[in-house]
Length: 449
Image 1 (cartoon, rainbow, N blue to C red):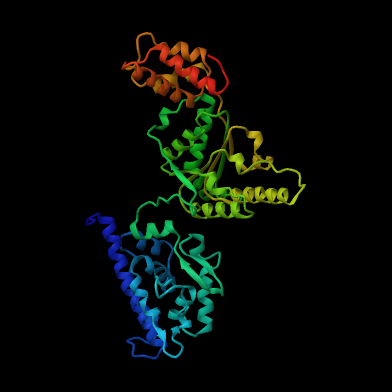
Image 2: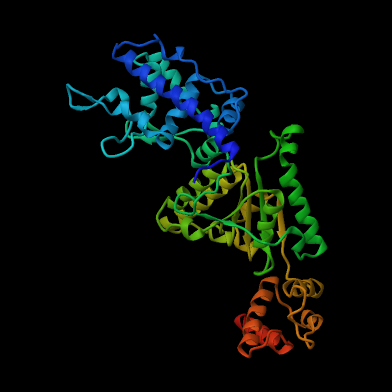
């Protein structure tokens, strides 16, 4: 089906012009190196398309970061395999003397797969054998360059040093540069997190006044954090990012609150899947979490670590090599989350299970208490909707006053009650149905009704 979305079409038109320019630069680079007929005596004579007023996410990115000739070409070279891999075919020609690919071209792959350009490929086209220009090109990947700062382009280390590294555009950047749409990462080993979503709104949260006030402060920080660190010049005094701890009994709304904080501020919330992160193999947990943070660093996401004590638990006395590695792992995670410039929310049922070094790393530690009778009544009424399915004998006030339950339990109780009503062929709930649901839910916690 043909896509007629104007922004996507505008971006595609800009990319078409950039692809044609990149192809001409590659052709000229090869011709000049092999001393073949060429319309120019330097690839730099091939002026890139003007993008100052061009529409689309690609043009906006080039303009915003002030990318020059070499930077634009290297970025486009890294994108060719995704946009038009056939433009890389010239690098597949073989040296007739060795019957192998030209070493000068660099790259990885070929014969049965897409040619993956390396930094050597870019150096071949832009610098040829001019050593000073090759070394200058390598500076594009220093930590203080815009490629690294904005995570526009990165190198996948090769086996033979810097110039054998594969050019990679991070998935989020590639998605934004090509479609202009927000990036939604796919759950898996490379991104072990799932997006949290809810049909509820911020106004549906049932909290006591003290908790509501604390959450308003967190929301204000999320919305105004950039103003505090940039406009007020506090960046050199404040650590980047925001780290928040939610702690309290299970079922008190920690996960829902994290989800709705993101929804209210227009940010996606991703819950970390600990089964994909924690590994029994030494170093693998740090590597898994490192990949996750690397993808999230330049996105407006909120990372939510549920049952955070599984990752950030207390360090113990070192009595064996395993203890030493476990302590090193926690120390690494502490440092990594402290350096994370985004928003991270950690949740735990028991604050005392977390390593004590975390206390000073949180901008806010918010306690989610079990709801009082007033909050429980609001939870009951909210869960029951307009009350049209409630029988005349149902007394929600009595249930809220008498039974100390959490918000998470209310939904389970109603599910049991509805099943009981359906089994007897009734379309409405009676007090006995709700008491049955209560009995089953409380029994799971070893409590009696």
